[in-house]
Length: 107
Image (cartoon, rainbow, N blue to C red):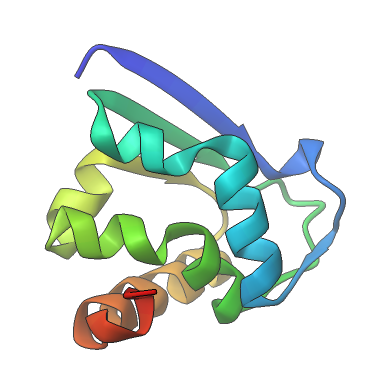
């Protein structure tokens, strides 16, 4: 993979990130589908100033990317998360759910 893109939650309106529609909107505005279709690594920075991130927001933002990657390891090989343990647990559970319920992203 050649290029790297940084997604910094500190640059978005926060510190609370909730709702699948909001995650999907951010996905579209960042062109995350384009990252998935090309050789682009993604560094995701979630600063300590972030108060809350809901699973629905994460699924809206990254769910389709997880499904496209096909496995937890393949997703994490492309998407690297810099965050605290609590948000890492939320992200891990979302990755597992996306892989288990792939049909929720087929719209």
